[in-house]
Image (cartoon, one colour):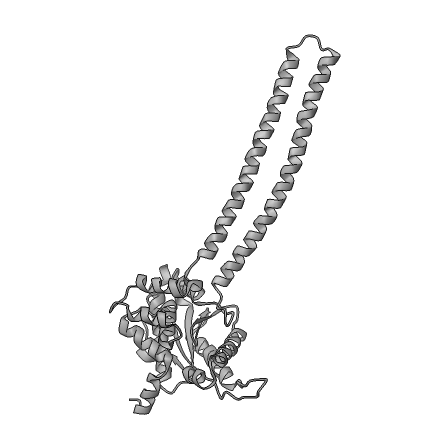
Length: 355
């Protein structure tokens, strides 16, 4: 049992309060839900705090997503991407309209040639004057078709440039929709999608792991030095995580001072070594203001890991890694806890071998 001061200190930790409140409400531990409760408890948005207090005793995911769309549109809405797709569709329709018009013009030119050929076959004697008229009509139709072809080529070239511009903007919108603006890591939207992908196949279940990391005593950092310093520390920690990422890893900021890493193709021991290496790097990093020389003290993180084979779903995997993280906090912080070490031997996931 933890001493009373340790329990009291834990209760003052915002991250712990968020987790406790979510559990009290029976809310699934999705990152987008964590964001709502984190911001509500931090008091940064009174209207959001009021909306959360107005939730039913056991809120549905639909109720939570409604709040998310209202207060975190950048992470919960896809209007920008949808609008870009609408523009793209309009540009394609404009191109189709140009091509339909060109087809009509070419068909008209073909009819002129057909009618001229038919007229010639029915004439027994060709006069010079008649030939001049025929040649003039065909030449005029040909020149018109050539000129129109040049116009169409120019128009299509312009439309292609517009399409490329819209495509570039669409890709940028998609990137921004999946990027955390503070750290430039993947955000919770991208993380939710990547986490769900694990359970699309037995290979994903057998060879993936989740690491959750949370900056220790972050509220006290904000209280002592202010939110700008807190944001700076979050960025430094994010940079350490980013520099530790290899090709088989996915790293995201999932809410407040919490980060997540999805590791592919690694054993539990290897995953633990990765987490431990990151923990030590952060612990050994000096956190000082370059301009003033202010020393913000040692910054540490607590971490929890869970293998995908020990969970039944993305939500279950996240919750179990979160429980391991919570255990690291309770046991003194600045440590890595394996979920498997908390519950003993996991179930036999070789049942998934048949896929």
